[in-house]
Length: 133
Image 1 (cartoon, rainbow, N blue to C red):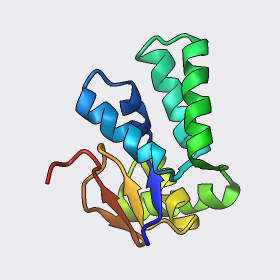
Image 2 (image 1 turned 90 degrees about the vertical axis):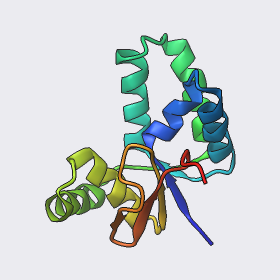
Image 3 (image 1 turned 180 degrees about the vertical axis):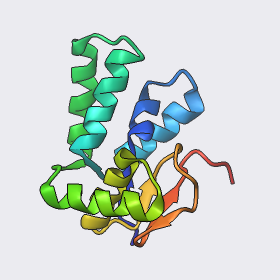
């Protein structure tokens, strides 16, 4: 059985004007899955900085996401693992921390559109949930 970790860009597509992507993101989140506090942090940052959303709107989104997904904390262990992954795979630290959280929780799939589809890091494979086919 697949254990899916959901990247922040998938969560952000809940807000998309692209109906197909918004619907797909909604289906992914409705199925449940795992996210980390980092995903929540990235979502809040984009909502405020790029989308100019009001805090009240962000709160509604966060409540919905947190009620549908298991949320993992950031830990010293996840930080250390992220540093090692970033060095080994030449990933940005933030992408490496997403992978580290996915690895540590036993996920085998990372749902993300902004990482290379099919990339495998320590047993976790990136899958673009918006890919056609």
